[in-house]
Amino acid sequence: MFHWLEKHPFFFSVLVFAVVAFAGLIEIVPSFAQQSRPVIGTKPYTTLQLTGRQVYIKNGCNTCHSQLIRPFKSETDRYGHYSVSGEYAYDRPFLWGSKRTGPDLMRVGNYRTTDWHENHMKDPASVVPGSLMPKYTWLYKNVADVDTAYAEQLTVQRFFDVPYNKPLPMKDGSKETVKLAATLAGARAEALADAKLITANMKDQDVKDMVKEGKIPEIVALIAYLNSLK
Amino acid sequence: MNKIYLWGVIITAVMLGFTYMSVLGSKGGLNGDIINILTVAAAAALVIITIFVVIKYVRQMQVDTATGELAEESWDGIGEYKNNVPFGWAIIFLGTMVWATWYFVIGYPVNAFSQIGQYNEEVAVQNKKFEAKYASITGDRLVEMGESVFLAECAVCHGISADGNDGAAANLNQRLEVKTVKHVIEHGSKNNLLYAGSEMPDRNGLMNANKNYAPITDAEIDTVASYVANGMTGPGADVFAGVCSSCHGTDGKGIDGVAPNIAEFTPAFVVNILNHGKKGVIGTMPKLDKLNKKQKEAVGAYVTSLSK
Image (tube, rainbow over all chains, first blue to last red; front, top):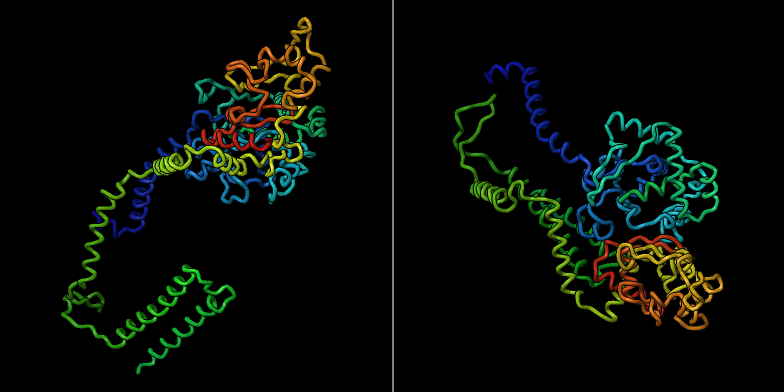
């Protein structure tokens, strides 16, 4: 039998491929399926948070800031609980990053607040002496792109079955629902309502005025995203 | 003499020369440092051993001839001797087998390693060390520890000198600012600092008992705010007695389970804020869950020491 295989290299190759591929499938797929399940307490992003996430990517925050806390005491002391794979279930793409010029931001929402981000993004060195981070002043003027974020939400809901408008279990046993508006106008209104909650804790008058006029500056969306990282 | 010895000597000399130039001849030199000395010694030894071994084997290739009985099979003209495996090799081979068995069965059993398990062990060891070294420290050492925790965790908002970074956070070099007290009186305090649901009412809920329970006035707020911020001195004692003392006590030192001590700045008060976070006139401060109990105590001791 094996002699026959050796004489027919093409079929032999196909069989070898099939055997190795099958072994790979039964090894890898179940483990992926298990570990990519969202952990309890993980929520999909709201429209404003997702807008902020795109601001984060657009400005290249992930080139200097990682979002992956490794299981070492030195890291968990500084950043909080180590990351587990299920926490990235709604991250498309995930923003693990590979270089920490700045600190990790995986759980920055636990230990920084809206007003801190507002001061920091305007002039990082004013709150962190010696900080290398540049000033991101344009975030206070540019209007954030809520429409694209809403499109992304609709897409992931439809194709990846991301559970918007469904009750999700939280760590304390309660249920929470992340709303997704049925129409674009609804999504804009919801994002604006969230933005108003954020600006209530901000000081910049221009930003407050913009939100009052119904425009959401990028900084507000970014802060909404950063506050959601927990 | 074979040419190869000559080359060996030349290459050794050149490499030792480079070593000399890069370390001993440089500005820093050995600097009397034991690590530097050992490193240079190791570099020299490496050069000499390498050259010696290379020469030995090159010579062996030049002079050695293979001997022994040839195996009967010939693979396209390539033969094989029937010699035994060299004794050293056999020992290493068997040793590897024993070691591999130990490795998989006893040392690091398959499936027994977990990254998280290793992390938990690391944390347990560290916590034990921390307990042994710091659990019982008090006084100046506690303040010192508080300072180092403060610099790592608190200075990003409150500034390295704790001055609040030009109003970005509270200035901790003074106990209280008038505007802070004023804000609390006007807006109340809903930070659940004492227990869940513990709230101080806003100005609409504050009445002056000495004036027939009339709601607190703007003038009264100004007076009593500076009275409290100045450490219960100056004008305003009458307003405090009428409005605040029913919860905070006549001396302002608080009543257990009802209201905190506002006459003094206590470490317990700071620990409370670290536990619950706080929203006040300047902005929101997050709670600091990542600090352990002793660290919070230490920060409390340090922060209260700043305004003394």
